[in-house]
Image: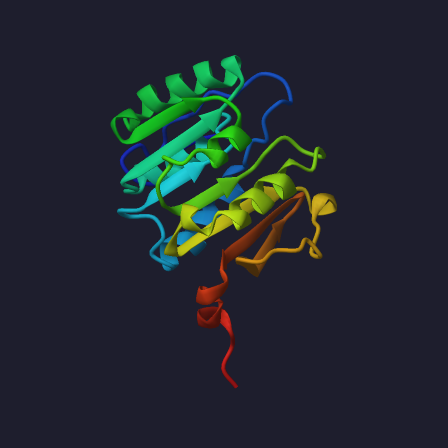
Length: 195
C-alpha cells in the first residue's frame, strides 16, 4: 500500500494488523482518484475519511492537493498507524484526526461542510448503510457540489436503500471492491445523460 501521486508519491504506508480495517488496493485507489481528479474533487477540497483506518485514501487526497482531511477512527491501534502514516508522508499539517465513533461524529453540530465524504467501514456489519442514512439526514454535511463515496464488497450492496437527499449516480467494481458514488439530489441533473 503506497501513495500513488503528489507530494508523497511512492511512500509506503503501514497497515493495521488484523481485519478490523478495510484496506484499499493500489488498483482501486488509482481508479478512484482518476475519477475524482477528472471531476475536480481533489485539489483545494475538504474531505471526511469517516472510518480512517490507515488513512490511505485521505493521505492520497492530501498528497494530491486537498486542503484538509478529517479522519475519524475509534481503534487505538489504527490511530497509532494513521498518525505514523501522516507524519511519514508529511501531510499531517492539513489533517485532523478525531478519536471516536463515526456515528457520534456525524451527529455533532460543529463538523462543517465537506466536499467529499469517504465511507469504508469494516465489512458485513451494515455500517455503510447506517452511515449513509445518517449523512442523508444531514444534507448540510456536504457542500452544494459535494459527494459521498462508499467502498464495499459487492455482496454488501443495497441498491434499494431509501434516501431522501442523496442519489446514487455511479458505481464501479474492481474485483471484490465496489465503489458507489452519491451526490445531493439537487446536483443529480448534472449526471443525467442527454439524448
